[in-house]
Image (tube, rainbow, N blue to C red; front, side, top):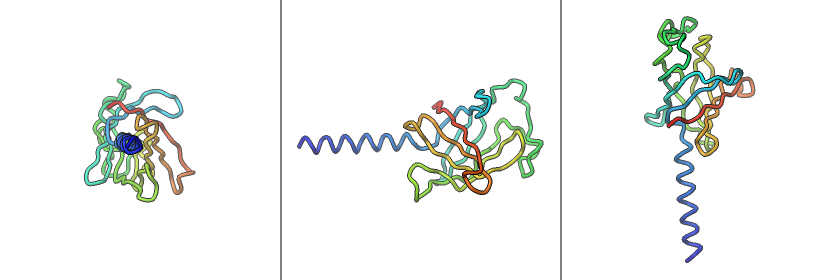
Length: 146
């Protein structure tokens, strides 16, 4: 009987940990080079597809910034409120990995393929933007706000 209770408690704990490891939520972005806080991005899921939108920019001088370097429909659009993560789906082959979509760097207008991986029990999000193969990219670690 004791083993049954321990097993049930373990399953419940695992379920809670996995639920917290979903990338949906509000994330504080941190520049991987300067370590400065840059923005808040809201990642939301609809129909199994993730997208991310900039909700707040910390630098007061960039509040009115527009994506002048963008080459798609976001060209000259305000960065604040812009969707920068699109079409990301859960990877069926690798637990805890979300991929298949893209991420925009509004500073240079470039669009990269993206991998999202919740870490530290869902408290942090590894965001890897890359061209071609994942090894040809860089990773930022975002911090969960809510």
